[in-house]
Length: 435
Image (cartoon, rainbow, N blue to C red; front, side, top):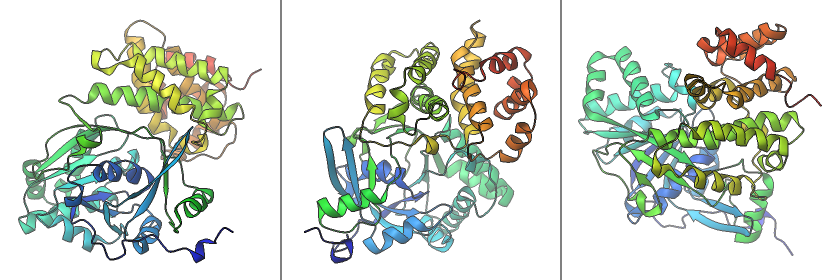
């Protein structure tokens, strides 16, 4: 007879000490736990590298993890079954609003690294309560304490994320105190990364499965695919875990790897998210099984591949691996989740390929079709979330080509003023809705 979760012991350390905090993370969520926390757990020196993870907008993850002493179960889900692993590296799960604890930790010489999963739109937000504003406050505390240099590692899907993080932090710091900005330039290393692990939202069914299979109650398990990749470029002046033990790759130039991931994986997700939902699908695997959606994705890959020429990228092998990953029948990666924040995502996934194709004298048809699919998705009346929501709704009040031009201008102002591109995108409207 199956026991209810209330009859099961709660996951916890049972008197075993957590590893000492040497990493602070901003943006505690499922992806951080399936990726950076997992990589740290698989380093040979994991016992020396505890993470204090702070939530973003909502404290829910901290409230779920704190009673479990930061422990959680990673469910590695493949076609062959599920593998369960307790990840012990989060030493503290903290409400992001607790800036006192953040400042205390960043003021400690023991803290060597700050990792970020704060989403693309945060890098344009200078509000003091926003994650980067809080980070700057913590860096000010570090400067005051004389705690020495530190590395900031952005793990967000932003092109040039290390430099984007540097620019945002220095801009905010300069607004607080020019001397603080100078200290940041001299003492903070900004590491660029490319991160990759499909991590769908955890469901109540996942919580129940962990209880059934593992014999304890975990309020916050994480489900992920077996594949995980982390590519990093930059300096760690106060040290780092041996992440290479878990397969992390350290390179001198991250941009080609970053573009491969942004265009091939994230770009494919974007075209599948909009085309798939327009054609009645709910998950990546369902959309991939639709020849119309798959052909659109493969055509975009063909365009992007022309601009991924570094031999070490192995684009054919990467594409083949993506097909296998996307088709994983037991990873329910929902298209509605991927479709959020479309204007920002298209700016990094479709626009660079479209511009590169046009610069080479080609039309960029597949990249333009991705943008058109987003417009059709918005026009369908589906619920959407976008940082430019006000502008999107204003554009949707227009008709025909004017609507196309206005929406395209939100993605890229220059393209929105290019009549040829507007005409191309407009001609592709209805691709996934017309019979």
